[in-house]
Image 1 (cartoon, rainbow, N blue to C red):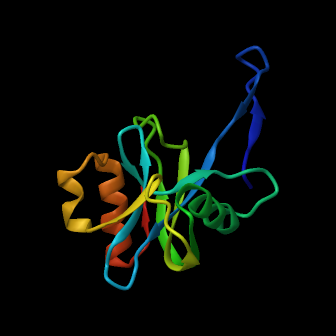
Image 2: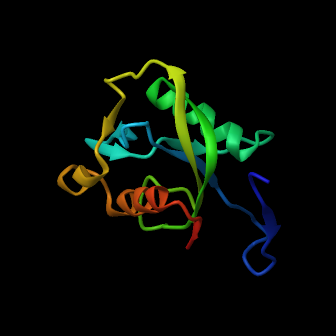
Amino acid sequence: MSQSGYFDLDVSQSVRRSVVGAGVCVLDDAGLVLLARADGGFRLPGKPQPAGESLPVAAVRAVEELTGVWVEITGLVGVFNDASEPWSAELAVCFRGRPVGGRLSTARAAWLEPERLAELPVPEAVRTVVEHGLNGSPYFT
């Protein structure tokens, strides 16, 4: 379910909505991670899930739109919640994936060595998700 709503009768009966983001930690055969350029730095490619679209489909579509790379989902990295990051959805589901085609848009994305992420403008939350993407077991915050 991409959005949930409820009535808070104590607060003027307004409808509240949760945003669910879908992204992919894409690793190639050389061990490089695919990151999208954003706000002078890098982040994992992902977007909010539109209504009527499954999370894996939304994640794959977001990667292609943001990077030009076509991916295949190979597993789950985890479910994350970090409201302190302005780019973050209220709830983010991150999948593990591998490239299967497409063409990298170097203006919008880059393949980077995971061990170099601390040297680059990559938020700590993104580095944490990549670490979990590399270790192979699902993570839930």
